Amino acid sequence: MVIEAISEMDLSPADDTLINRLLVTAFDDSFGDRSYFQQRHHLRLVQRSGAEIIGHMALCYRSVRLGDALVPIIGLADVATAPSMRGQGVASALLKEAIKIAQSSQAQFFLLFGNRPIYAGHGFVSAGNPVTFTALTDAHTGAVTTTPTSALMVMPLREMTWDAGAPVDLLGFSF
Image (cartoon, helix red, strand yellow):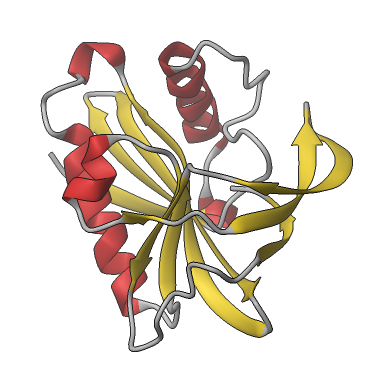
């Protein structure tokens, strides 16, 4: 199956609805009528079966602070596979494409919040850095929070070394 990369600004209303349908089906929590959990992204990767979107990953390109350094990163978000398609390689194919895109960017690191074995199997490693972010709940801005997390995973993309002891400031919402 072909993986499509869709710029957020080129996302059609029909695909926006199909992605929402997939996210609502794949997760217990509600995305409302949105095709994203926290905020719109920069790039969507989708895989289709006929007219339906059966797999989705969103990429966010931005800078974060790693200690005192301002570092460009790619963040992975809103990963979903249709329940009927799980275990058939959809997420793995999408993740391989996401990694290729991240490697071709100027980003130093590829980050995600999660702990599924698929991520470690593709080269992400756990990082215990304290993370500062602006909480978003139901598309409303919440408090700025700093918390240790065991869910942060990192993949180096360039020569820069990840400082596992440095605080990470996402300079906004989590992805």
